[in-house]
Image (cartoon, rainbow, N blue to C red; front, top):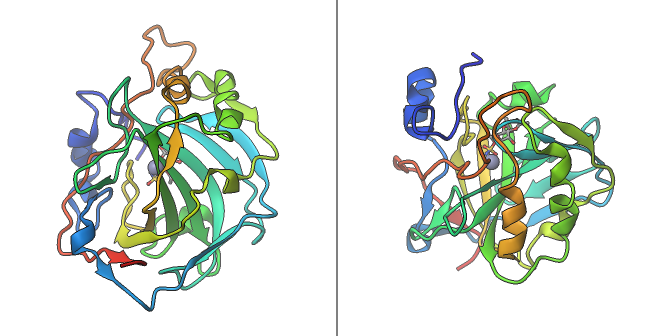
Length: 262
Ligand code: SG7
Ligand code: ZN
């Protein structure tokens, strides 16, 4: 169903259940992570990222976020280990963020929000034939989530922020070759993991979430560049700044959050 949804008063997260009843399902994302309630699992392997040969293709504005897409015809860039039974291929990454001096992350930690959250979306090409098929399967996707906190300028984020002017409007797309998201990882890959969903419609309950505990730091000025993007297309007369494109935490409903660390 191509029903219109967004982050506004009328079409925002609290209205999504009307067109997408799974919004009130048993394994929705994001969640508030309470570290004291997470269960340390000594048998969880470390996360392993093989991004050396990854090939970025494009950067685009889908009207909800800014997305960098990768070539995913083979296993050239995969995440494995942690809670994952198979290797999952990198498909795309995108960000969620707030307004000026506002919260922007989707997951929260003990109620604390971050200024932004980066999602690296991977799919299970061992069990499923296409990304679309995987996106609707209970173990189809693995999203690696990285918090962005306010601090000094991030030395590598400028490659992305410098490209944003090309994708100001919804529906715009530009070449974005040779970008390796390895440069956006924090030093430690300690993580929490739990079974959840896409955080946007269609809200499929298909995501194994891997949320890194250590944030990366970005400056106010860098976050400001994301807020120059627009939710609207060029031909629309109403200009709507792209900001606050995050869903708030959803009920845990008895799920266990596991931690890779004590
Ligand atoms: C963003 O979040 C986009 C979507 C993504 C959605 O709006 O990046 O991706 C595209 C290509 O439109 O949807 C299926 C999918 O990846 C939800 O992703 S998320 O759960 O990681 N936030
Ligand atoms: Zn996301």
